Length: 293
Image 1 (cartoon, rainbow, N blue to C red):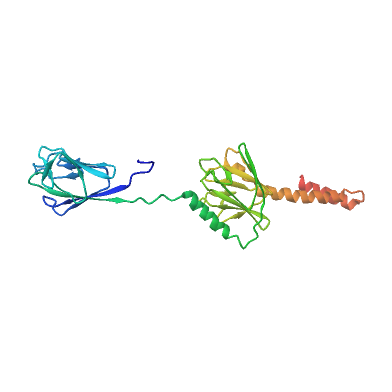
Image 2: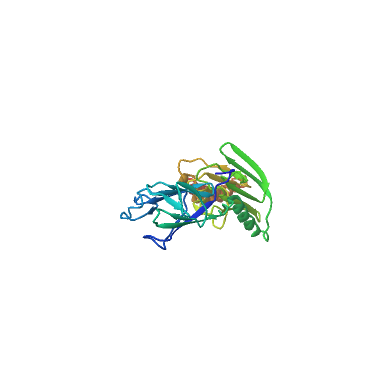
């Protein structure tokens, strides 16, 4: 690392001019290259080539340059000059011994492609997703979220949730992705949609793909085995605490029964008014027996 930036990659080619590997090109993307007869070397010469030592030479990267270091008993030569160590330039020819074999050093710097800006990618996805709703009736409304000790209200059209601090509401949970879900208020209804790319935002166990309209008491799960919130209606979401996720999903069949009973109870109240006749009383008794057998 230099000046706070990572060093560029350098691609090295060793061209065999003559010898047992004449015409071969060895390629490396590493900072230390070794040459010799020992099998542990990067360039291994045949065991019968006794003029080459077991550990004959090495190339060591220093910054953006390479240094050649002679390690063997037989001197190496650079452009016909004996050497122990020297700085290499692309095109230099090296005699590994006075009789050869000869190799040529080539190198080039590979510019690194900047890592993608994950934040910008997600922002672009969100911008594109919002454009899909431009022709629909988007409305701002009040949202309130409660998770652990954090309670936050906001007046928005779309609320983004995830573990990234740039989200509208942050869910600091290891199973929640950086950008996990959106809650959208549109046409007087609230919708949940998954933006994690993993289909891991669920509404009552169902993936929010592309989106699911929320109903009161729905349970929204943010990530696989992630935190859960109950939709309380009118833009309010509250954390659900439970030992198992199955326990948190409302039993809609029971809710339907309660709705039916409430309707029947209202009917009972009508018949309990002072003008109730005998027939009405008989009906009430039969109705009560249905609700509380």
